[in-house]
Image (cartoon, rainbow, N blue to C red; front, top):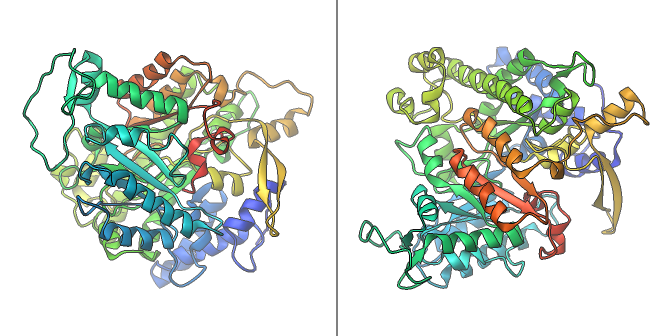
Length: 574
């Protein structure tokens, strides 16, 4: 087997620290182990065939999530799932949730929670601090630090405390998001008031409140006052993000049998209680033919072939992995959610000569994602014919509008009705930061534009000391090899901070119609962007039908550890 190592020291460092096992020294060793482990679930007479197919796809740009790369085939009972959502079981506190969280975090899984079930009191921040302390303790000395997501509904009585929970740089293992309803967003537009209510309290009482009502009197608040508090905190601290919770549930293929109120830590998977992320990404740069040439083009048929293999590979992950909790295993087997996404988008567009912030680029990417969606659903239907549909599959309910699946082409809907579907969900776009660095020579992560052509990264040595290594963008390196070190960069070479905020949002909008899960994306905005314009970005996201948004403005009020990061989610391992 060939043995490939990136020329970049930082890529080698991340690979060897995070993903290799004893006796492994390069990417090919890791890929060979993963292919062997996942093909072992096939019928004995098919194992060699699927080993070869899996290895073929892995070498051509199918990149499983980090826990799959690190754990598949490493030990008999490895946990291969990155993240979960856990329910808050008791209105008065954590109770049994803490035990479930500790078990999950101890095995290396990130966790998201909807804290809206907690009764109004000081228990909210107390519960979050307890979970943060536990996660931080379990993360000490680990290569992959723990990650958590805290979510609270916009109409929970403790919403203001939640919005300001990280003002003093507390809760370092948490990302925070507010679940905003369409009713709240309409109230913001109309300068109307909303009532703050706990889930246990009756709803449907007072509907309309005068706009001149007091700010926070008797749990009646002008929606714009709360909106302003959310926006100011996000503007100053990078958090909280927004989850457009009604859009998430309307689009959900399984809204007939589940309610979603939270996501995993990086928001690429809206999940029900005990739901799990089984993820992989396609490195789009491997699908660009003749990069930087006049006839550069995207290999659409090659993408389809990779997607077919990826769906089967991720299906096998669900059966190979160990589970922290029986409830997580039961949830996964009932619905068989997987999340195939993309990485290297910014670099792929550069290699094709397309600026990230143009309509042409968005149209091209939408074409790729349509192929991914249609191929993934067809592959899942074919796999259902072979292995059986997921147990909760009901064709009429599943394909009913406005579910995501109702927008599939008619021929694919017909196949789903006939054969069923192996997976309730198939697509999610993760940040993919570490795997893009270690396995792909530092391609731009996820759907982000390139953050910088060159930058410095702190690396910790075995003796605990740290030193700086230079990391260079993959497309930039390739261009220098093809065109020469002195060649001027053409217009397609655009970085995240050169892309207008509205164009960041527009790219998510171009992809969103073809993704049944979530899309992890940070909208980078300049430090001097007025707060009013910052607010407009979030309104644009809601009106565009997106499921979530996080905007990040590098500024002097951020803690230094956040200020240095290109993406506020990259402090977490996902």
